[in-house]
Length: 90
Image 1 (tube, rainbow, N blue to C red):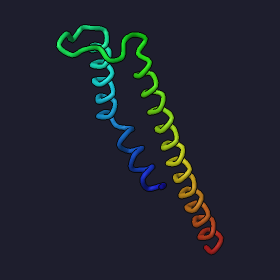
Image 2: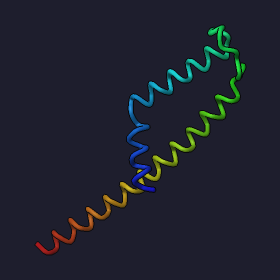
Image 3: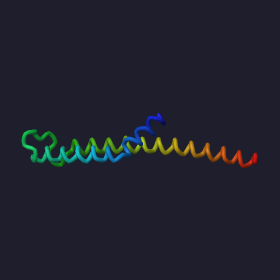
């Protein structure tokens, strides 16, 4: 789970993911405000479906970031303990 969280945090923390979300949300809003006429609106203002999806995305991203931070903290603690043991031996 920690490796998967680290991988996901690395991917979702990229500018590519930012651009993907910006394009997706802009397209969603343009479609559902009637700016793109050939696609019928499926989530009219106030975009309740979009709000729900973004909220769920935020929840999962926060969980993955927390898991990744916990893993990083464990690794840092192990490094610190090893360094302390080496200093005591020296």
